[in-house]
Length: 517
Image 1 (cartoon, rainbow, N blue to C red):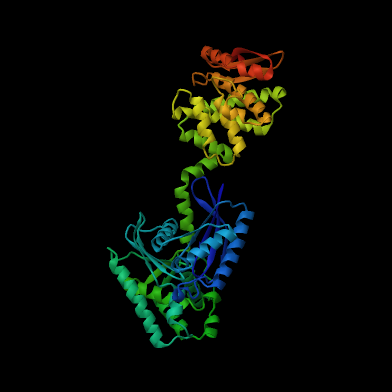
Image 2: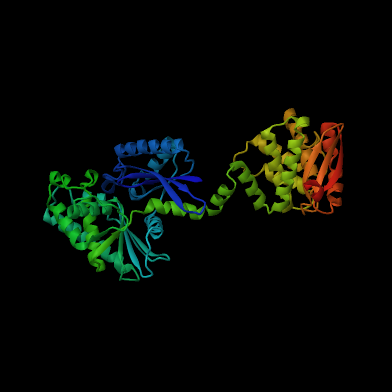
């Protein structure tokens, strides 16, 4: 299964989700990690990430990256949101993260953030045909998204994040009445303008994501039942209950707030502005309750990754070995006849296994033979004439991830000699090889020449082969029909085999029915 580590560098927190992508293009969360780094503290006033916040964030990211690698997660996608994208030194921070933590971070726009959030929500909650309003209250921004079960219709990123509002309007706890009015006016102005810009003004429902909305719902549920919220996803919060909690937060000093059952101490200063945003959004939308969704940007990133890499992930599932997968990928890009290439590879490997007493080569060389067999005809993409030489060029200059430069040179040479002239020192690619590799190329090419001849018509008429080693090497071809063309071609390509092993080769055919009896 493909493993993916998703890192979300937010204004308030850094999250990592470790996911396993399943063959049906779904996923399973294996673990989650979170650290409240408050990267955006002071950023919106100064337009800079503080040195202290950068140091904290990088230490957290180094730990998360090491953890992911130790658990076998070799793919990581990471995004940074409002605090980093608005900071003048955001680029310096991103460079430091890559240098020190080995994580490449993509700074995303508010619109892209909204798209990813909606992707997470859309795949987690059954949305209606009618427009739904989705809101994500982050530390630096609020993403307001209009969509339905089919698509995202419109999105706005508003500078109404809870950390931003707390720093701007709420320096004291409890805040003064004039500052609360100023906060409400600022929130109302931006929300109203955003809603009025939407083509649709009436919404079927309001869905709220983010930890801030979840913590508000948790507090309300504990107040009503005395028990923790059993499930955040699809839980509902009424406008009436939200108003009451907002009033309590606005009137409480810090110590009293911290004593509220269910309140996350790390959100003690941000829950009030988040409550104001959500309350005003409900009022402006004419709705009496909101529904929670516990999936948002991180899950959206997973769905986005799956959508972007669907074919590659399918190939990984079908062909787990990265080297073989990349070889087959190159063959497919070059439009090689796959049935023929796979059959030639199977025949070549059969010859390799049954002549091991002669050549003494191991698993590494066996793999090189298979790769060369799979790629031997890719030169047809350039021109049928001298396609063996074109195959050498394409293999040598392709980025076959997982193979060293030396291995690629060997595979390219073996494919190059699957027909026509035999290896000679005057050929540049072959002549530059080390003596040990020259011998290997001759042996593997000898086997590939015969295997390719045995499928001369591309009809897989020769089903398999059995080799008998004596003074003369006898190759018995099990056939399912007339194989005169195949045996003729194989005999004409046995010259390199006879030279490499210093034994004559004899071919005979065995009807498939006789071989099975």
